Length: 505
Image 1 (tube, rainbow, N blue to C red):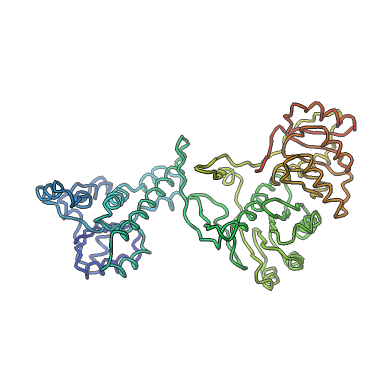
Image 2 (cartoon, rainbow, N blue to C red; image 1 turned 90 degrees about the horizontal axis):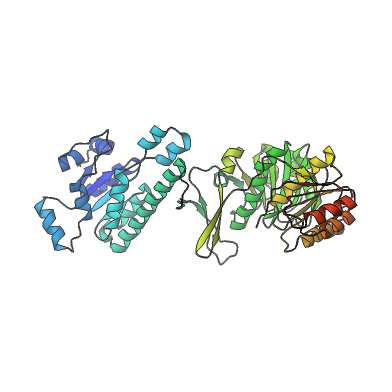
């Protein structure tokens, strides 16, 4: 029995090779792997000695040789294969132990094309794919974590075991290629998405659904989060944290240091800016303290001691922030089940290069990420908004972008006063927001109103005016824009068009 061993990651390989040698397996090896095995008194044979062909092209060609690949790919159920092996004096190779050049790790730290190219493994994937194709006879091992499993089962390895190893190997080469495609920026009719498991989750949206949390290669974002305390994080927690995190990142365009967003069921129920983290939180909570129960608090800054005391007075599932002061952690640690999550600050360029991918039956729909980095508009009414109203409209527009469509936001003084979201009718979203404000005793007089999509009828203006709204922002684009503008002009109220819609389904 023969094994070829060629690994970049050499963790555990000496022990594994000694085990194989003890089982009577002859070992063929390459370059630095061969040197390491010889240093540890393992009787390995170099690839050059085995094939009679030396490494060339700075090591680019060493295992790409017919004697090796014929030894791996031979099918002993085919008499012709046996005859050809005998004719060419080729021996069988039964075990392939290979892992690959660290392209992903290099790609994370470097954009040097020459360095990236040199870290694209060729011989390794070729060995892996050959062995995987012939799994009925050949065992392929691509993960050092699997050495122990192989050693424990070595005397009872069957075709099912080899098939599982082969499928893992194919998954590795597929993922490896997807990272190369991502790094070099291919945009064509084939979408290669490589995902690596971060952790399995308790379950999905509901207890009967299996779920896992996967990370994309070369991307900064939520998979880098650090859970500081609390119960096991759930599928639904991650979706809500994602909304908070997006708001934390995009809020930078509003030029305010302290923002708080309270998320419930994947949509904001309270958002505000303030002159401190505590003020932002208190203003966000004011919007809808009822819906905030069991929600997620997101802060685009640091959670300090004062804020921690306030947060601890209520029941929340998660608090996500860029950092937590030591005193804040001490206070919040008393709520054992409260999940505390620390996320990285990432710039807009890293953020906007992400894709939104949603599943449908039998496929996926993929789009560029929807992000705001500026606020451009056109005044379409006779009355022009004041500078103060523009600031409020800008804030309301930001909030409406993150609420589920159809979405409406009443806002004043960098604070959401009422949010209507997820309705099949825009005027119903408006009425829901107004009713919620009424139930909570929130006065909408003097507020501005943002809509994530165009107003299809003037009834939205009539209802909002009756509620106290004094300025409006919407994308425009309805066949009844003139009717809507005319309604604003009748009330001498300003309206601006952004000419950019922000649906969130």
